[in-house]
Amino acid sequence: MNADYDVAIIGGGPVGAALALALRDSRLKVCVLEARPAGSASKDARALALSYGSRLVLSRLGVWDALREVSAIRTIHISQKQSFGRAVLKAEELNVPDLGYVLPYPVLQDALTAALQHSGVAPIYGASVTALTSDADHAAIGYRQDGVEHTLQTRIAVVADGGKLLVQQFPPKVRDYGQSALITHITCSAPRANTAFERFTPQGPLALLPFKEGYELVWTAPHQTAQDMLAWDDAKFLHELHQHFGDRVGEFLTVSRRSCFPLGLRRAPQQTPMQHVVLLGNAAQTLHPVAGQGFNMGLRDAWELSQEILDARPEELGTEKMLAAYRSDRRTDREAGIRFTDGLVRLFSNDLPLISAGRAAALTALDCLPFAKKFVAKRMMFGANG
Ligand SMILES: Cc1cc2nc3c(=O)[nH]c(=O)nc-3n(C[C@H](O)[C@H](O)[C@H](O)COP(=O)(O)OP(=O)(O)OC[C@H]3O[C@@H](n4cnc5c(N)ncnc54)[C@H](O)[C@@H]3O)c2cc1C
Image (cartoon, rainbow, N blue to C red):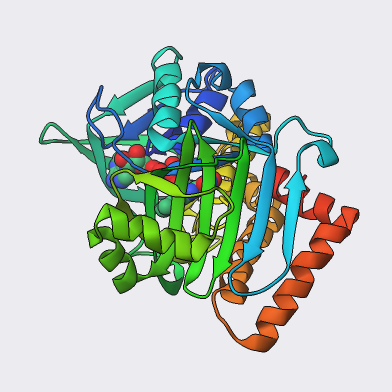
C-alpha cells in the first residue's frame, strides 16, 4: 500500500532533527512531528558535552559551523573526593585536536532546527503525537495540532520523543539512582582554559565543563539534597561547592540560575513487538549524565539508522529485516555505553574504604598506562563501534 511518508520522526529534539537532516538529500518522503510550536526557542537549561566523534557527524550534517557558542575541551581531569588517585586525559596525547566541546542544549537545538527549515524535510510544529499503531504494511500515527486530530501513515515511524509515548505499552527497564542533577553556570578566580573536571564524591559525581569565561556545573546529589541545594543562597552554594570540589580553579565567585533534573537509567526493550517502528535517542536509552554520553550515543543511533535507511531497497523500508539489521549494528555500542555510565555511577557513588582504595588504584593505573587512556578516550569520543 502507499503510505503518506517513508519516514515519520516523532520528536524534533536534537536526535530526531539529526536523523531528518541525515535523510534530507534522499528521495525519501520524510516528516518530523514536533510538539513545540513553530518558532519557539528551546528553554532547556542543560549544557551538553559533545564528543569529538559527534563533531564529525554534525559537520557531515552541515551544522557544526553554524554553532556559535562552543567551548573546546582539551584536558579532562578525573579525581575522587577524600581519596588519592587521579587521571588526566589530554588531547595532544591522543592525537586529536580536542577531546570534546561544551555548548548549551538550546544552541544545538536551534542550529539543527534552522538547518531543518532550509532542508527539503517538512517539520510539522505544534504537532503532539498521541497514538502509534502498526501492522505488517505500515505504522499509523495520530497527532493533535491546534486542537485538530490528524493521522498519517508511514513505512517507518521513528520514536525520538525522549521516551514518553510508548512507556505504558512497553515499559523500559529502570534503575533509579536516587539522584538528581543540579545544573548551573559558575565563575571562579582561576579557571583553567579548556579543562573539564569530573570529580566523584560519595553523594554522586560532579562535573565542571569549561564554557566561555566560567564553567557549566553538573552536580549530582540525592533528590532531597538537590532540592535543598536549589534553595541555598549564593554564598552558601559557592561555599559548599568549594568544600566538594577543592581549590583546583581557585575561589568560586558567582552562580547563575539553578535547575534540577531527576536521573535514572531507562532502557526500552531492544525489540518492541511493533512492526515498522524504531526507537531512537533517549526514547531507546536514557543514561546518567556522568561522562556526557546520552546525546552522543543518540547521535550515533541517528547516523547509523540513516545509513541503514539509505542503503535499503524501497521494498525493504521498515521491514523487520531492515530494523533487525539496525538493532544488531547498534547493540554493542548501546550495551557498552549503558554499562560504562551505569558502572561509573555505582562504583563511584559510595565511600566504602576498600572500594575507595580500588578506585584510587584504577585512576592511578589509567593515568600511567597510555593504552588504557587511549581505550577510555576512544570509547568516550567514538563509542564502542569506533
Ligand atoms: C542534566 C543533564 C545533562 C546532560 N548532559 C549531557 C552531556 O553532557 N552530553 C550528552 O551527550 N548528553 C547529555 N545529556 C543527555 C541529553 O540531554 C539527551 O541524551 C538528549 O537530549 C536526547 O535527545 P533526544 O532528541 O533523544 O530527546 P529530547 O532532547 O528529550 O527531545 C525530544 C523531543 O521530542 C519532542 N516530543 C516529546 N513528546 C512528543 C510528542 N508526543 N509528539 C511530538 N513531539 C514530542 C519534545 O518536544 C522534544 O523536542 C544530559 C542530560 C541531562 C538530564
